[in-house]
Image (cartoon, rainbow, N blue to C red; front, side, top):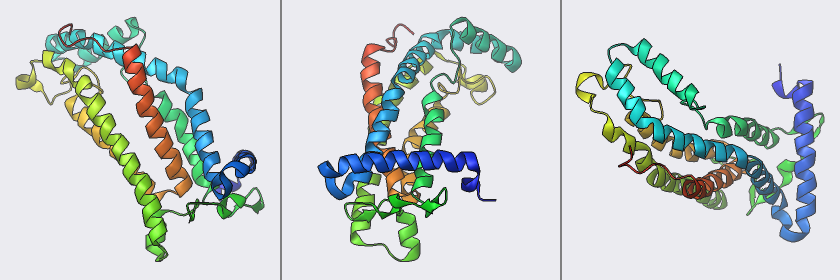
Length: 268
């Protein structure tokens, strides 16, 4: 069964197709043949603007986790031999503060369907029974529905394809590196208060939360570059969405970090 032919999904894609085509028609007098790409960028900006309140909540949750780090470390030392008790005490502390260990993950969850819709719009030849006109649009001479991996596999890769995709992928990776450098050190500061590494650092009670664990932080740093890898396999339109998203996220986080600064290391 074709999932995209399922009536509710087909209707959703048809509506999204109409919105993007309408925006492309409005932007064409301003940007010419790149109007569909500009429409994708505009939609991305609108989605990110709508998620600003969620980003504020995310910044507040990050500050709360940093403030709770000393108390969480104390719970670890007290209950390191009783993981079940440790988890109960940790969750009780989070509840009393009105937060959770995974607070702030909502933006990623909300954006997943948007990325899925844009991905579908630029791989399907037909949508709701009619031709997909978005596939006729290009960005700097490269079809928005093409992917770097697909072009290489089919032997149709050109210099334009390499340059455009290379620029998008390199910029996504650069934003990821800046994000890693700017935010990983602050996230690891609370760990200086945890002395139990010699007695069970790899056990169930080894970290206060998934986002304060050094191993988890290294994985989060690696995850910044996973987006660049994804851009190799998705259509160019989806790659543009990812680039604008990671750039917006970095700028927003830097601004909100100033508004909601983390506690100083000495305070922890």
